[in-house]
Length: 139
Image 1 (cartoon, one colour):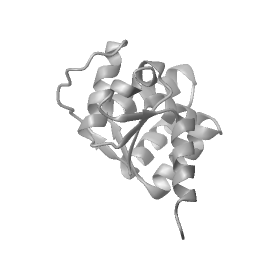
Image 2 (spheres, helix red, strand yellow; image 1 turned 90 degrees about the vertical axis):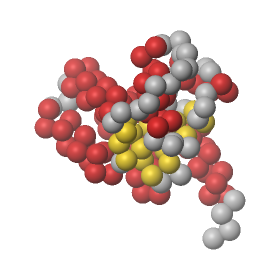
Image 3 (cartoon, one colour; image 1 turned 60 degrees about the horizontal axis):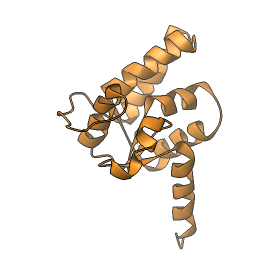
């Protein structure tokens, strides 16, 4: 499955233990991680400026993600309105990357998930979806 992780999920995964870290780990191990330059830029900014993560650690995290993910650099225009216009490029990157699911904690996506052109799930919803898939696996 092609999984697009939003910046808030990446920051949580890299800075804390918990569901987001588990999601990132399973996506890296069992799925195709897809990201966008907008998301990587936001992740770096938040880790550096808000979380005060040392620059070297931020660079290492970015390098790892770039090695492991398919990164979309220039998404096409997307005529889609969201409550936060800054989220439109993220949605465009998810669409351009052919993501099957957008994992995000952003209410601006989750509140309109039924209208989005890609399946948008919270980290918890995505985790539960993965667990359901394991139960139906006969192996």
